[in-house]
Amino acid sequence: MPVLEAGDRRFESGRPDHGDWGGEAKRRFTLKDHRAATQGVECRKDKGVIDETPGAYKPIEAVIAAQSDLVEVVHELKQVLCVKG
Image 1 (cartoon, rainbow, N blue to C red):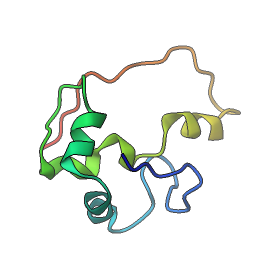
Image 2 (image 1 turned 90 degrees about the vertical axis):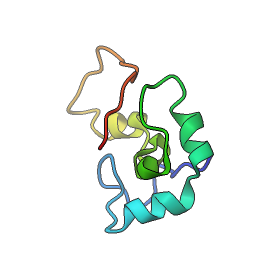
Image 3 (image 1 turned 60 degrees about the vertical axis):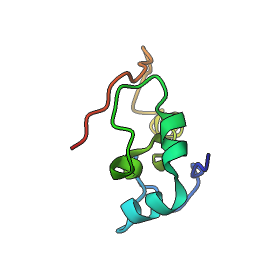
Image 4 (image 1 turned 90 degrees about the horizontal axis):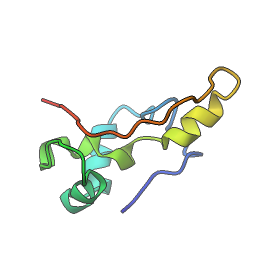
C-alpha cells in the first residue's frame, strides 16, 4: 500500500498541506488499500472515504517526534472506530 514519507513537503501537521489532497489520496489509494489499512477498525469501507485512509496521514510517530520537546507519551491508543459522513 502506498504511504507518504514523513519528509514529504506537503505535510504540515497530520494531513498534507495541499489544497486538493482529497483528490490526490483518491488517486494514490485504492479501496483494497483502504480496507487493508482499516482492518480491525469499525468504519466505512467504501470509495467515499478513501481520502481518510490511514496512509493519507503522516505517521503519528513522526508527528510526536517533531513535538518531542512539547509532549511526553504516557499511553498509546489503538483506533477501533472511525465515523465520517
